[in-house]
Picture 1 (cartoon, rainbow over the protein chains, first blue to last red):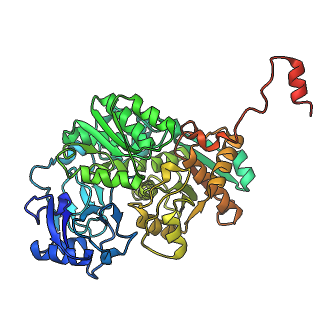
Picture 2: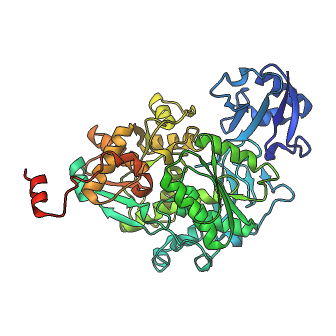
Length: 91
Length: 424
């Protein structure tokens, strides 16, 4: 599935400053694997050493926080917008 | 590992930030120059201000102004901060609450009543620090995501300082908060969604050209902003006669306030300004938005986000940024995180008003409600010095108790009518 991925400012060093990139995959896990193939190293910023989403990263597929859905197994339909956002905001 | 900030972002010398020396990731320890950044580039962890305090004496503090700037030598602000246009918040009353203590079976209880701040909530403290950072970094627009109190505090602070403001709130907030926040002349934008959705929106806005030149007090200025809550700890200790309380109950929304009160207490100990003695920190949440309390009770060290449903809208953050640190602190200090339902919140608002003449907003009801619950269940030491925070003014959340707080009677202006109405 073809999707778009919004990149937070602190990870744009991996995407040459680009804020939104195209991606591919049927699940969030696949999308992040492809993203890391396209922009080597970026996956390790989003996922920890055990392969889980880092605790201070929020990932959304469309409007849905994937922690309310299936986490990395959340499906990513064609045209979905994925957002990676630092969690340490607000309050 | 040490980082300098990305090209194009502002950096500054530490003298503009008083004793502050840099930023450090709370998770992995990576250090950064002082700048308008908030998340670690290595692990996304929160950045904390680090300091070199030097020698700080009680006498110097005591001779300072009667607002938070008496603690400027402990904050990331310039030495002349007190002379700049800001709301000069803080030095709110520490109310000796003997009547409430008697009802709860406690020997000594104080209420730190932050409804006495310029915009009637503790948010003036944090915004004052963020405002100074915004000035130093050259931002002309102050912004935030808000559950209500912060919107008013940012609007007012920006007005005083002559900055523009654009603040974002969930569209369904209490009318008083919306009205107050819009009165200060900045842009107030209602978002159709929960606070967490507003927060997400702001986090995306800051990465867009629309918002990248703005100072978001609780996003790119958050490391500075959050330090403002340390002043609650400093004031409580000073007002108790340079002593730490034995136990304290603090509301938990993002969890930032609780973690910074703990940081403030530890700094006072390290500087020798108070005796090093144990204290216990308790967090308070509303049952309808209790992700941290749930995690505490389940023994988890991570917080599963929830969708909020509570009258305590100022605490309705379902995905609390500092939740894991609240868990750490409650466990380290021998405290706890507890919650009460909305009915108990209203009861607690009325209890506090009836016993102490302090009219709290719903967040204060949550905190006093949890205090009461902990006392009833024997989880507080009844002989220990206890402090509870009231972080906002009941006039902002009138709807929460309006149905139960009506005139006892409406009568004609005659003695007979009064006698008839109150014959018994």
